[in-house]
Length: 420
Image (cartoon, rainbow, N blue to C red):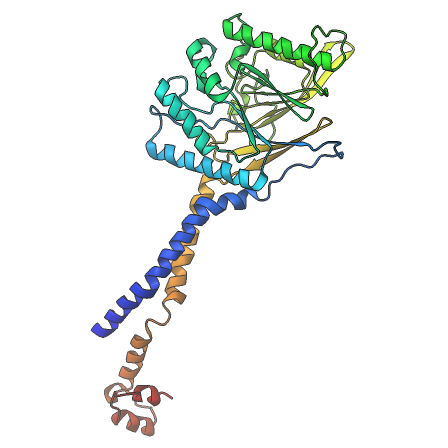
């Protein structure tokens, strides 16, 4: 028995434990790396209905990453969420290779409170976690968590975000006749503050450039774009709406939260600011965020009897597992003639946990029934030999076989020859 136990321990150390360790390593690699590929592989760039004259723009849109600071959240939660977003984003970069990335605000959870040194650390962390490959550009708009709601914004908070992340209150980005207008939503308060005045002057300037490019008689300047198309607005707040009750997507706000009334300038842009942007910029699509939930709204504005402006607004869900159980991002294919949008999901938290548990159970079952199958042959052989001794042999057994047992001496290979 002592010899048998020693042999089992030796076999467990030399064969079972290495197999178990390799299995655990594979489970870790799958649940922390490969699962992001498995989840995102089915998602691809949406196809255009018409063949574009020029290569379309392939843009990835995400929002509300909410990187934690020093005040809120546990350090383990901070590490875990940042690791998940990093792996999800880098996997998307590898699989989809977007030409440009738009991040629609609330990059940081505590940007409105943090000191200068902590903000610099925030920016460094963001660029490390969301590093884009060569050939991919990134454009950022500011959110209320980055510099505060309108009433809390100071010139210092607004300036440092603008400088560090190249995010002025309003910015025009043109890529192959596709024009994107990036807007600071908190600057759309309309109260005449310095930030608001600067933003509205820039919007008026861009609106004039678009009019001149379109050959409008209302053109006042001499700056024109090479090719005119209606712009796409990128901002943090959604356009004015009463609530999310009009949102019917599966990942829209849950009930009864979906029916909660929105507060203008807090949950969405004011009605006046929305109409101002629509009438001046004539957007063909709008992308917002802020609610952490998905929504698709078709707008139809009629500034005059003979003039109707129609477009679709997309509210982008949060990219962080702290805000959603199922984070998402958008892949957008843009040409001067059309826009197509595809929504890509990321693995749920419980999916990763259940997968890890199931894979561990399969590993243990494999080691129990297959991985250690030859370790107990000696024990089985000893048991069979014991049953064949004269004192334990059954009464109805063959006499010749009992004779063999009585002459049995456990030396050499006779145990084996006895059972042949």
